[in-house]
Length: 241
Length: 278
Ligand SMILES: Nc1ncnc2c1ncn2[C@@H]1O[C@H](COP(=O)(O)OP(=O)(O)OP(=O)(O)O)[C@@H](O)[C@H]1O
Ligand SMILES: [Mg+2]
Image (tube, rainbow over all chains, first blue to last red; front, side):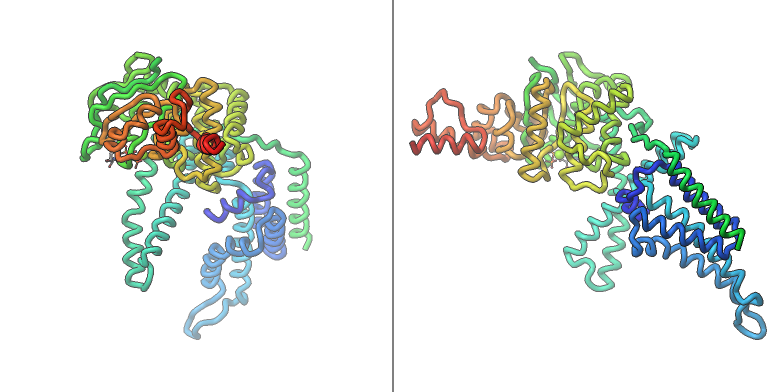
């Protein structure tokens, strides 16, 4: 979440309309799930990675984004690709093909979603959901949580730095002790901060709804057309193979 | 002409010693008032009373002579007139981008979106952060956050703007820019109240000064008289500003005419020295 937001804020696609990005990402995800995994899902994975690269996500960041879900998917795949019976541990009857297909599909779908996450700041995503009919209360709670994540992270980072400066992280015993202290006081501190935020909002006339003037990003017909062309070509490739 | 007034305010935090103990303060219209006091004196607590966030145990706050009530509707109209910028900008910024954050207050005033957009642009420009409009607040430096938080209050065009330690954490250049922006506001008719423990800043910039010690205002009035009162300053654990001391010394030695203005800014002090050398 934190990494995606950092990337999104610096993305070349930050000002692209949300609809264009959503059509591209969700379309790619749909294709990853619908097309035969080879070459369909593979093509989606490659396309998502190339688009991420074009939007300004460096290869290292992209791999770091993909790594945690990939690890999850890999553990799941092992269960499909490997069998244990009286003869011991061996590859599944289909040679692990089913496992590989599922893994490829899942990874491609995740990559398509990450493309959206790494190019769109969370508040813009929430704004989009609100326009699609998400209850305003839910949208505002989501936005408040989003802010709170940064406050928590910032508070934790500061506390950790302060502990380290006083040698609280030298040796594993002290490290564990410091981590315990940090965990114990992080929440009260963050809550205190949230309370002060409430004062700050009230001072500007907060009446229960967090309305702000967000920049409208017009949908470009050409952008949508490009997304459609990409999706249709991948679909064609996947079906014609 | 007094615009905002606190009379006999008493307040104690739950389970704490008294933070305000019979505090009286008068804020004059169109002036810049510095509230000077050491850490823990109760400055922040006072500002939270002046915009209706905290309700005193006894005493009252008056605007234009009318006592303010703490009902929901009254508080809303109170906050239309009295803006507040908190000590820590992180307590104030919440939206996805700086411009969105600044638009929050004006939208709550019920203004049209086009009017709000104009106010946002103006507030960002007056604090010289127009280039940060699309940045998320968590990707700003402390000083930039501080200016964004002030812009959020300025965009509401309050009659009175309360600022809690506005210059704390700003570099000298940032402070100069901030004070210039606040000066423009003051010229536009906004009454400014700010807290600080920097006596030199108060002397160089404030028209009026209130000295704060242990929950009370021990002395208030024009900067020149209050800041020259060694006893009152000592009671508030503060020292007189250097340029004021310099000017008074020059007067006492007959080097500066009794009716000549005392040096307030650095440049005034240097000019005084140059005048002496000639
Ligand atoms: N939330 C709180 N709960 C309990 N006591 C508090 C709380 N906030 C402040 N106090 C106490 O009230 C007194 C006044 O605090 P206040 O924050 O108003 O001081 P201040 O003049 O703003 O200080 P500083 O210059 O450090 O900002 C202090 O003694 C402080 O310990
Ligand atoms: Mg304070």
